[in-house]
Each structure stands twice: as C-alpha cells, then as structure tokens.
Length: 353
Image (cartoon, rainbow, N blue to C red; front, side, top):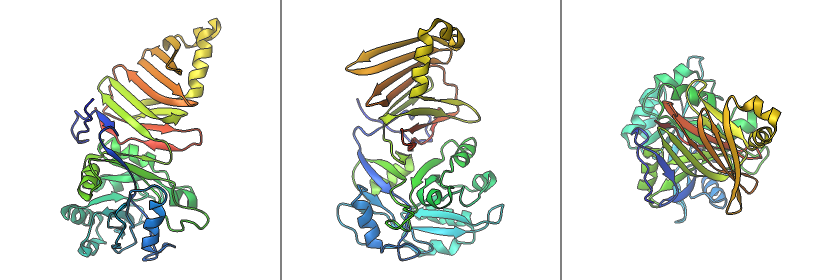
C-alpha cells in the first residue's frame, strides 16, 4: 500500500505511517556549557547519539551553538530566546530551529518579530514550556507563524512538575487545529540528579536522512511526540480512525471541548465481564449493542458495537496494539494519545477532519 502523508493544513490528509519513511528520533531542545548546561556541546550530541537519536539540536540561551558532528548524526542549529512579556508579565521562551543568522536575536524584545524573522530565514519556531512559563491562552492565540508548542518538557516536569502543557495545546487547537505538539527534554544536567534527559522526544518520518527532509517533516507535521510508546500507524477520515502502536494500556481520541473518549484495557475487560452477565448487561446495553471476543493469529480481538459506532481492539503482549473506530465522527479535528503501563505517553499531531 502506498504511504501518503499530506500537509496537515490539507483536510484530505489521512495517513501517517513509517512505511516508506525513515524513522528518526530527534531531540529539539537541549542546553550545553555554551549557556547553562552541564555538558560541552559535542558531548551533548554524543550523549543523544549513543542513546539512539539521529537528530540533535543544542538550543542554548541567546546564542546559536555550532558543532561539527559525526556523519551518523544530523545536527540542527538552534537557539532558545527569552522574548517580550506575556499577559502575566513573564517572558516567552521561543525555540528557533534551522537558523544560522544571529541577527534574529535582535528581535528578542518582540516575540512576533522574532517568529517572523525565524520564518523568513527558512527556520521554524515553537513555543517552549507554556505551563512552566505561566502563559495564557491569549498569549498563544495572539502570536502567528509558529509551528507548535511544547506539550511535554522533561526538565520542567523533573524540576517543578510543570512539564505537561496539554491543556494549552487543546485550548489553542480549538482556534487553530494545525498547531503541532512537541515533546522535548530541555536538558541541562543529563547525568546529574535529578536526571532531566531522555524523557521526551519526537520521532520524525523522513524521505531520507538529510537536512532538507527534516525541514519537510517539520513543515508537514510528519512526526509524533513521545515519552515512551511508539505510534506505528494512524489513519483518519470523516468516519474512520485506525491506530497501531507498541502495547499500551490506554487509547484516547481527543477533540475540542469535551468531545472524544479514552478507554483502557481494564475498561474493556470489565465491559466483557458485564456483557456476559445477565444483570451486568442490563446496566450497559443502553450504550452497547454487542461485544464479541475472538482470537486471530494468537492475538485477542475485542469488537464493541455501540451507539457511537464500531470499535475494534487488538490485544497482544499484554496491551492494546491496534484500535479502530468506524462511525460518524463529527469532529472538527482529532488527536490521538496513547499511554503504556508505566504512564508514559505518545501523541499524534492533530488531524483536521
């Protein structure tokens, strides 16, 4: 089957798959001794490369750190800039990637000008740790031209339990369903406690291992973010969603307002037990019309028919590895979140429907 992945701003986009692409684990926010990190720049790259990362950006504060890297790792020049003031008087922290010209730093007093300069130079800007920065919805909504926001930041979570910015993401997605979500480390200490590295990353799907292909993946949103699980396939249309992943405990479909749902493997087991019990069935048949359990190729398959449509779960290695939902979805957009038994999560980028 031909793999296609169209621009997120094209409503016909319906498939994200590693088939036909190169999967490249990327760290897009980190620090070195060139600013306030504990490792020299080359050691930061070496650290991530030794842990399976193919792409690294050292985004030191207020300066573009340039490094000669080994041929088996692609280095992206970047910088983190504190710029302007939010509604609550805090600075925006903006990460700029694929930038070479130091003149962009002259716009540090105006976040919109900074983003504009990054974009006009061919780079990409995203908003760092909005929860940690105490930003508001208005702060994010007023800015234009950034590709996304950090939805998970390891350093912020380790330091002060403010690493997740999912509420900010969902709020801004209600206005613009094409804002991307990125998981990063923002590491400073690496091997010193509390460890703030190897906790969050993005996996890009590349046509080839090149700078240009990375830029295309950013532009198209051809990646997912993770703190552990892998998303292997995502298919979306107006009446169908299909997900394949590493074994997970929970699958969630999330959209605007309160639209969407989440279901765990424990929920499924309980539904099956209730359905097989006469009294239990009476308690759930107002929402469910049937539940069937089967085995295919040694793997358990649970199919649930309900007023919301047909849901099919494939269970193997102790977790949900495939989920499909057929029915009238009726969402403006959706995003997928999966969670494993250790509480680690992965997030798709939003898909307009």
